[in-house]
Length: 223
Image: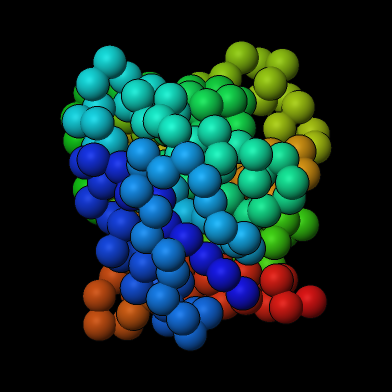
């Protein structure tokens, strides 16, 4: 199984993602620079957190236009798994792979702490390691994590079982609509989420609730 991490100028979680992927898959991922327009055969692509292009114009907007994202979109259309975390989630909405937008946090402040989450849909390969309704704790670190979409889009996401994670009751750190913390596309092969599972794979750091995602992906790809 082959994995890759896309590296944009301003990415700061690319190494964390690479460590998590290597621990789960037993092999170092390819580190792909944003100017590369061709991608090798891959099973999983990770878009990491950070501040791609310095968050100029709008978070993720410039990264969405980079040469590598055209190749990422082509891979996603062919069924390759794509995981966007934090800034990666913002990039996925900006390039149209996921609906909605990530706006400034409701309190207009950068938030960095652990949050409680509830696993919702488990039909996606990304959620294979979780049970529906399972409560987990993952760290967040963002200023623009307030997920917004119009009411009809939100109804569709919920009706189609495309809400992957929701912030636990009374623990919505950014004002996201309906407490949404992560969503998948219609095929279930693209996931965008604001919390950081790659920072929660080692008990010595921020716990291990993120490990299940990466181990579940190994199982899903091996099935």
